[in-house]
Amino acid sequence: MPRLNWRWVLAFSAVPSFALLILYGVAPESPRYLCMKGNTSDALRILEKIASVNQTKLPPGVLVSGRSNDKDEESAPSENTAPLLPSLNSFSYYGIILLTSKLSSGQSTCFPSLQSNINPQDDGLYLNAFITSMAAILVDRVGRKQSMAIMFGLAFIFLTPLLIQQPAVLTTCLLFGARMNAMGTFTVASIYSPELYPTSVRTTGAGVASAIGRIGGMVCPLVAVGLVNECHQTAAVALFLVAIVVSIVCIQLFPYDTKGRELSDT
Image 1 (tube, rainbow, N blue to C red):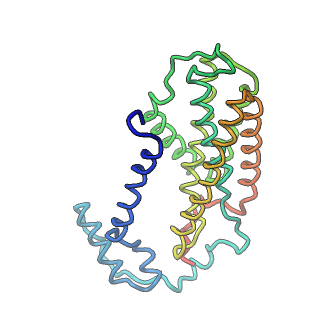
Image 2: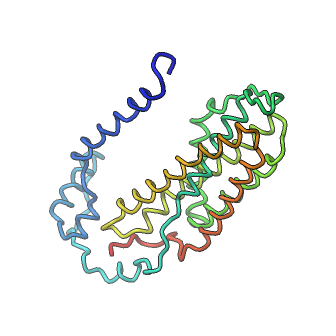
Image 3: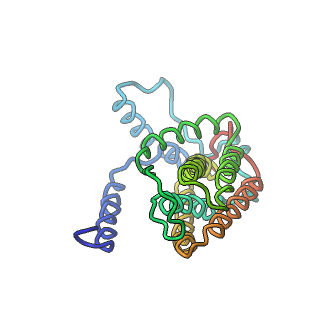
């Protein structure tokens, strides 16, 4: 950044994306997808390679196609299954990150008394590991839907006191609590979303949902940074609280939880 500018940083950051396009060509296909298509020979070849890499052997038996599996039909999602609504999730998550940066940096022109020596990025690695572990514990005990609802609810609780100005250390702690839970909802959504889609469109469905979610991530800086820079902290926090409440309502409207369900191929 000091030597060039943000445009060059964005350009260089895009380079790995083009490298991924090349690597996708050598990535193995999903054996489950191949079996669903009746291509058991290629599926077996990939499974054997996986076993070889892990220095083990496949269990004895014959790999069969699951193209006409009645069990899959029974466990298939109903036609009125609502897709995940990820834009509000992204909006809330990136907004909380931006609030963390703005309100914990000690550079606020609106509240010059907000001076903090805590660096929001110092413990990022440990925070991510903790959140992933917490989400993993919740998701298989209380289910996907309620895990997201609980963590959104906790994020709401952490954010609410920030409707008014708080001391610097308390502000940082509240923001990190909200950020931790917002990140947790992303972790659970990454598990729940692919489970909602049948094998034939699983990665496509989850990928499109994730891409749409980035719209919230793009809109959020325009709203959050603008409000905070104009000294409207209360309005910014209130907006995120509303987004969180709407997200919780949407989660409760999902027709079923995927906890304990077999993945559907149809």
